[in-house]
Image (tube, rainbow, N blue to C red; front, top):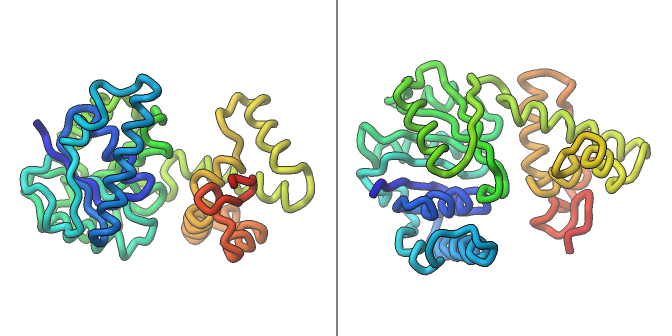
Length: 280
């Protein structure tokens, strides 16, 4: 049975761990301390229970959890891990620290992947001794329900690594789009642009949040409107991505004043109970 590691046990990391464990893989989740690791374990277990209740799990949650372990040290990653996915916050220094430590903890054949939604794969790969074993695996929130993984190729990513990752995506029952490294890749670049324009429309009083979202859901068959999607992603996360894209692609990605104000007030979306919609 293959082993994989997931670094970061928040909503995204726990979701990634859940889908791999449900697919029959041994999973080791790394978090910053013992309490955070325990919380990550509970997130995975809760997700599996929800999947079982919806009839979407092969086996019981308890049996699947036998394949899941947690720890608080990157050095505790399985040395025989076939894949390690980094799913820590969108801060390039943090990701560089995590990835370089992971590379030292695992074997030379392990594939290292980042779940970043916008940061440069090329810049991250430059810090590694084996950039050919590095790739982007951009999962979407919520991971268990999403059907897409955006596979991002760095300039040195080996073709065999790409093929391995595509096989894993298929194992998870998901579909892939393969893109080359560029700011925001394909999905974040388009999704953030739509979200920022929706925020500007709200700021200008064109319509209320519910109407803007319904326009895209009913008129363009989007499963979720851009403001509700921003709430789900997190306004702080969207702001950080927009700032990065503005620095690399220009003023068209400059964050609206309203987004900055909401983040400053702590209105970060579903995780705080309030964003552009009320989640309380």
